[in-house]
Image (cartoon, rainbow, N blue to C red; front, side, top):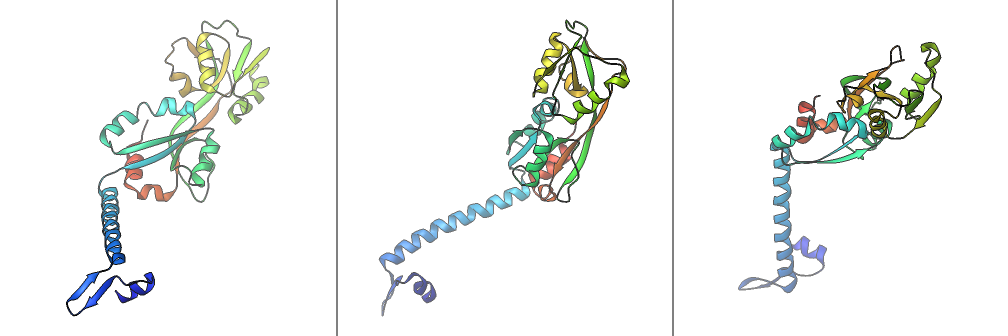
Length: 241
C-alpha cells in the first residue's frame, strides 16, 4: 500500500492509534478500484463466453455476385443456431477481399481463384464454370455483355476466334448482377459464371454451344487464428453450399 501511495504522490489513509481512515484521495481511489474490479469481471466473463458460446462479429468479404448464391442458403440456419454471432459484410473483387484478409481488415473471405499466400489458409468449397450465355428470348444476339476487368472475361475473349464466335457490339458493366438481369431480359448474350446465372432460376437461359469455358475455384480464405475463435471454428465447420 505504501508503494501505491508513493506512485500516486498522496496518502490514501490517515493513520492513528485508532486505526486507519480513508483520506479524500483514498475514498476516490476506492471508488475507482471498485469500478475497475467490475470491469475486470466483465472482461473475464466475456472471455469465458467466447470460449463456451460462439459470439462476436465475423467480418466476411466476398464479391456481391458470389454473396447472392452462397449466403442465402447458409446464413438463415447458421444465425438461428448461433444468435449471438453478428456479421459485417465487405464486397469487392476477390483479389481485394483476399488482400483485406491478409491485412486483417476482415476475418474471412469467399474468394474466386485466390492466389496462395504464406499467411493464409485456402479451403476450396466448390467449383464453377464461366462461359457465354444467351436467353431464348434474346433480342440482340449480336451484343455481348461482360465485365471486362475480370481475367475470366479476358481469357474467354481471347478464345473466340478458335470457337468461331463473333459479336458486333459490346456492353460493359462492373456489375455481374446487372449483366445477369440484362441477360434475363433479352438484351444480349453474356459472359457469366454458371452459379450466378443459376441464381436467377430462369429456364430460358442456355449456354452458347462450343463457347469457351473458364474453370473457377470458390474458396474460403482466412488466417489460422480465425479458426482458434469459437465463432470462427463453428463458421468454418458449418459453411457449405
